[in-house]
Length: 110
Length: 114
Image 1 (cartoon, rainbow over the protein chains, first blue to last red):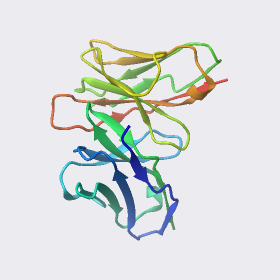
Image 2: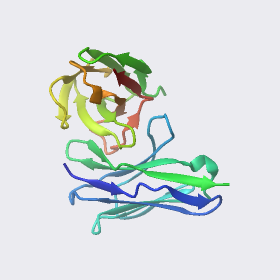
Image 3: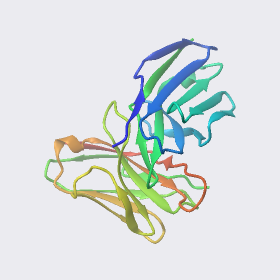
Image 4: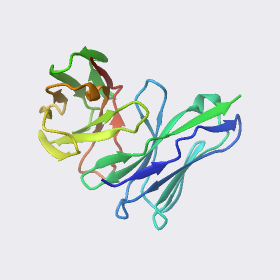
């Protein structure tokens, strides 16, 4: 099975700072990439999808994709304590199957 | 728009028993995927159902089986439960045949096997 790697963290940032979350993947043919947020004891919530190289912005979130480097990142601007959660990177394999990383724990300190 | 729902929320079973988990897809979606999430890990793909047929399977043994119904809802069945089957079981719905590949998760079923 193809792999998706994330730093497990925790990543600690002060309130108002930019949080940068990174993900690398092994399957060169992957075309679809996703970021999910998961609060403790809850299910994953889709926050961003990205299919093309470059940046995609949605509110305080920016996803960045570099297929040549097999690298996906998520930037969270003006981080809030409510952003504290585990962030899961997911890559879609052939057959619309999502392969997830183990997640990065983000802690935003007020 | 109705989101993805799952039942039951929590379940406790004994090793060797069988369990059935249920999922209703989001309105307008025709595909259901099931995932298993162990504590501290990312979700692992079990299988996907589209047009009432299994449409891809992960590295799970045959005692994990499923169904999809004409209304696109789905069941996950697990026979001969093992202690390692204790996990959060997630279903995700999506719309196959579109250019949107996003999958949306339900709240999950927490299964504990003792």
